[in-house]
Length: 125
Image (cartoon, rainbow, N blue to C red; front, side):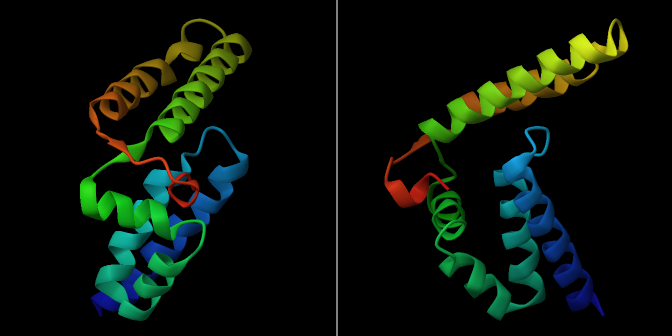
């Protein structure tokens, strides 16, 4: 009974990760990593497919091996969070426009504490 739930959770996380490629408010990497976690528990074939994927596989493998994120991905995440928080603060206005700020700061600090993955073209996602 749990396997289908893991599979649905993985598919949903992967879908959100793919949408996050185009939308700056949705982070791609955490959703892809969550999908890998779910697929590993729900369907080994889907987990193997994700690990072999040319775009997402290297980021998942690097995370599994070293708990590391490429420096370029960190800078991109910080930049997109800054732009998103700035736009939200400008559009929504005080005080509600500042609600995403603590989340962005927490994620930014967490990213800063992670080791840098080796920078290879296929590890940048």
